[in-house]
Length: 286
Image (cartoon, rainbow, N blue to C red; front, side):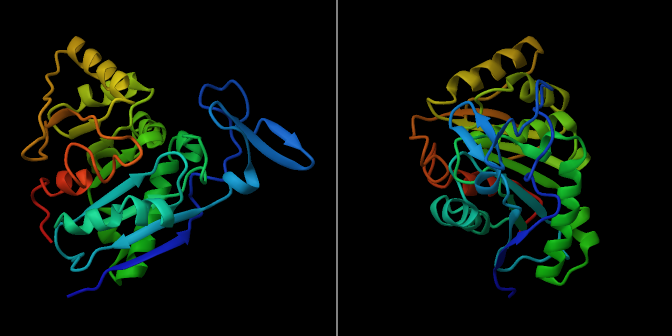
């Protein structure tokens, strides 16, 4: 049986460094210069410097034990929240790779580093149309090196986009730009809607019968999730408030929980909610 493999590697097509404009066009992302350093003014965190916060090109690539690239498979792309690093938080604290592996899904994990250990949800280059497509192409090449399989195998795999907390911002950018195209099988949000409700509602309404969307939320993101549900109601889209027995095309669920935000990835409406949800995605057994 193939052993688990994981690596954190630099990407050319990473979210950061980013030297473009804010998504509303109001000004440059790097809006502060001091003593030769460039920085960004974050609404929550104040000034963060490019060399400390926005210069990490790392992406986590992880292949569970027993993964078979010759069988139907899925790429799980995970967007972390604020105050995070890949090894300390995504791998160790939130156990995202362990949850993907324990789900039994024939899947690999890809997780890019966004702002390093900062109160900032910026999507960086992923705000730019086409950037996430380039990221997926590079991820396929990296996964091919790890597994020995052809990159073309990964280029054709369907994608599940999962985002926690501040990961909502790059997730919304990906949906708005349509960069994942027909490969995007569904979206999983974990206490992750603090803005962009219209973007999420628009994507759900436009894919209500062909994709799945599940948002598990706590008290902190309840208003954002309620806004999406209201917008969907105006489009005549029905949603469920129950945990879905299967993740199929047409599944649209908003699951309330009073679990703490900081530990939501491992303790929400169930323990290890990402694992629980991925295990209900049929057609890709490992």
